Every structure is written in structure tokens, then in C-alpha cells.
Amino acid sequence: MSEKITISLIKADVGGWPGHSSVHPDLIEKAKECLEKAKNEGLLIDYHVTGVGDDLQLIMSHRRGVDSEEVHKLAWDTFVEATKIAKELGLYGAGQDLLKDAFSGNVRGMGPGIAEMEITPRKSEPIIAFMMDKTEPGAFNLPIYRMFADPFNTAGLVIDPNMHDGFIFEVWDIMEHKKVFMSTPEEMYDLLALIGAKSRYVIKRVYPKESNPKLKADEPVAVISTEKLFQIAGEYIGKDDPVALVRAQSGCPALGEVLEPFAFPHLVSGWMRGSHNGPIMPVGIKQAHCTRFDGPPRVAALGFQLANGKLVGPVDLFDDPAFDETRKTAQIIADYMRRHGPFEPHRLPLEDMEYTTLPKVLKKLQDRFESL
Image 1 (tube, rainbow, N blue to C red):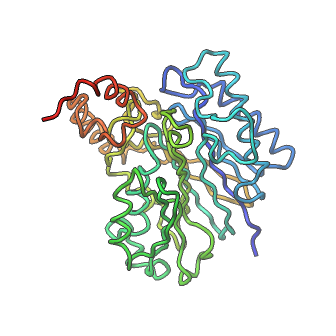
Image 2 (cartoon, rainbow, N blue to C red):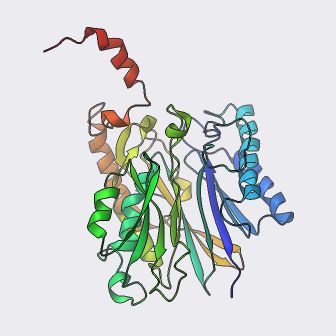
């Protein structure tokens, strides 16, 4: 039997270059230096470092399991070292996603976003790392649903006997801090009733069913980061900028079925100051620099083959003319939404503006409101 391997994708905004646009190359080099040292010491099997928007992304393989204190401390220390350079370079918001003064055993609740899965690798194990910038965790709800529950996206749900019985979705209520497991296709409509409210109900993990012979039912096929920084900090801090890991092929959706949901640039919340709705644009890493109105929101996808714990790759999956029309559509949507200026639905509704300056405006005017 194969040895279990853990894939950890941990990200943080430790300084933008310039503004909220990009990650400075020196931060990426420092992160590589830190992770290479950990690899040489035997903590990591392999790693890949990149940047999407202003987020520094650490993709790591190891045998320490999910929520490993050693691996999380490595990520935290790496972000701290990168923050030092960010401060030297005068980068914007240096260390803004590091909400605590010192590591306390786990980076959950400390600011960085985390997506981790511990799996027993199949004979061939393709894994895709999705990284978003200028949006919220719920931005993954629609594409993850389409990958694992929509037969119009994923033909395998109809024609692959391994997948025909569907999948189990773990959904978190990030306001009440509760979770529920829902089975598709039989609970599809109930699932949609929840995850359509993407600012509150977020898909955290997807599991195969017992009937799927290619996969272990207790090992996820997809996992998404769900950390919302404003809830952790109690004020508007950074963006949420979620990440996800998705397994493909052999009992899972094929690679093309995993990527297909992003051919539609659906509306997500975030964009400028985390306070606007806009289209999510699939881009290659070289295009993952948020510029127009600090956006529009971006998603990048790196594909790896996992072999004996090694991350073979990556392939920059959205660096492909097949997504050119999607990017054009996203630009048209961006034009349309921007013309609304400070009006909804471009600007988020009031309940989502709690951590902006809007409450201060209302407080200033409260004595001037008169009864009708």
C-alpha cells in the first residue's frame, strides 16, 4: 500500500509591489531559500513557490499530515522572513496577513490561508493548485460544485461508473462556525440553497463515496481555504484570497473537467478594497498581476503530478489561448460593472460593508436622520 502524502498550500500577503498588484521577486527567492533548507533537513519532500496577485504562495509535499505544527511553523517563519524584506523594500501592507505577534502551534486563525489534504496517492496522481486574488473563499463554490456535481460540466458524472454515484460535500457556515455533509446528486438542491449564499456557506472539502473504487472515502478529492481575515481580526484586513487543491482523473473529474468551470468568468465579491463584485479572470502566472481597479479578480492554476511525494511540474494551466475568450468576456463584464461606480450591485450590499468606512459614515449622520 502506498505511503500517505500530505500536500499543503499555504499563502499570505506579506507585501504588495506596487500597491496590491504583485509579489516582489526577492520575496519569492527568500521563500525558496527557506523551503529548500527545510527540504534538505528532511521536513519537506518537495515544494514550489510562486506569487498570484500580491499573495506569496507556498506549495509543499511532506509526510507530517494535515495541521502539522512543524510544517505550519515553517510557513509562518517563511512569511516572517519575507516580511522583513518587504519592509526593507517599503512594500505596501508588509506583513498584513500575519495577524499575531508569534507562532502558536498552527497558522489557522493567524491570517494566512490554508488548503491541505493527506492522501494515499494513486498510481498516477494529478493535483491542481488553484490560487485566487482579490476575492473571498466563497468564490470557489460555483466552480467546485460544477466540477463534482454538474453533469453539464463533468461528463464523467454520467458516463464514468466510478463517479456515477456522485460525491460528498463538506459545507461550512463561516458565520455560525458549523459544518454539514451533503450528498450529491440526491441532495443537490439543498446544497445549492446553501452554497448560493457564498459569503456565508462555503464548500470546504469534497469526498468520494464508498462506491468509488478508485479512491478512499475518507480522503478528500478537493479542499478549499475558508479563512476570512476580517472575522479573525475584527476589522477589515487585507483580502481573503482563497486557494484550493483538487485531484483529477481516475475516479475524479478529468483535468479538462476540473478546469472547465473557469471558462465562465462568474461574478465574485472582493476586487477593489474587498468591497465590489466583479468577474473572476483565469490567467497564467505571468498575467496574475491585479491592475485595473486592483483587479479584476484573478485565478491561476498550476498542475502537478505527484510521484513519490515529488511535485512533478508545474504546468501553468490557464496560460492557454483556449481561455482567451473567457478573458475577453471578463473584461466586458468588468467594463459593465465599473460603470455602476459606488452603486450596488457593483459595490457590495450593506451587510458585507461592515468592515469598511461605511459604519463611520452612518455614525456621523445618525443624529441627522429624521423620522418619516
